[in-house]
Image (cartoon, rainbow, N blue to C red; front, side):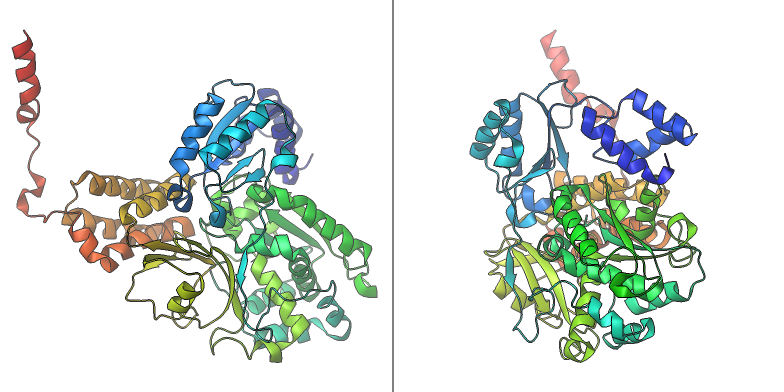
Length: 573
């Protein structure tokens, strides 16, 4: 057994027993010749690996803010009532185990849950009652699970649609026969393709760095660990056009000289695994994967799908690489790029699903077609997953440069007030900013747009965000581990009505510290929205806090605090 196969081996035990028993830990440790503590450390890192026995049906109910605002609590109560179990407790029930989990990529169909990783959407207490009844009667899960389709609500005109257009397998790959790697790179450069995972780093620059790097082996990794709450755009591509994504990986392999590829698929999308693997088999059958691809000698490339196990930080490329190696998915200190030292210390390209799909479409359609779409600095289209207080939640392929107001009109938003761009780690905007354009020159968006109307509690939204980061922090660095806990306590003070202007200033100071000194993007960006909200919704926060003068730090008077209690005791004697 190799260390790189650890994640898959742990899944085998988890699927077989419903948890990972002590003898499994001992067996793996012995085969890998490492301590049991080290394997324990890996297991404990991932949300979907359990060390205690679970029931036949493991139910994960999404607790993201969109779910919370659409009936999460009533659905949660219904699950507890019907199963007789308590959430997040191992209560030795042989049939059911209940756990809360963060966003599962179904924000347009909330409340939603995964039962043994089968999806169930638009849940209500009535649906839960019927569902649990069926499970108690051992009805086959696959026969009653939902098949959540991607609600593609909008695409531009045909001459400007890039992603969601007709697809024929191999269209982009056939361009390889008449094009050199350098020519393909030039096409990508002409379109200024940047990564679509949030960092927006130049894709051509990354691929060229891998191409020119002397490395005994090279790897292409597709980051399909779409964990940012409110984001489900990559799922729409994997569900509808997996071939487009795979072609992008093959093009990257041709350009860089890589012979091995991985699709790191988040466990929440396990129900897409068969579709992806069958598509890979079809590519192999048609000569687009394997040896001597398209008849080109030495052009060999194969792709393997690896299932993640529930860890937000594995969305960071170095965290993902560590996870693939069989280690805890903790992001590395950024002292070099993966194209220099990546997977197993070899040169590695890591891009997300949408980036590979875009690269494939660029080569297929040509740079002249692509460069006529978008703005000067942001060429092409962008896929957005839009959810919240809107009539038409789902997927929107927009041309770069569309205004926020135009998007709100398309999705039929109701009294929009607080708009969250790029998920909780992104930025919030208020109703004075709806004129802003979604593009690199103005308002960059990684893929998620959450719309909240004027009747929603901003504090409730922010509490959900910070609680998410507090839980997902890997704990490797103090600024993130401690900082998110402090921010969470500050929000609780606001809820209790005991927050002062000094607390708001301290929030900003802590966010600045976390931005400067955190190890990875989680800590660097987790407090952004909270800090922005304090400034952008100043009137709202002014009603929530009291002015802070010198007597903000009045010494605690214990005698006064217990006076009424003492009087009650005296009166009862």
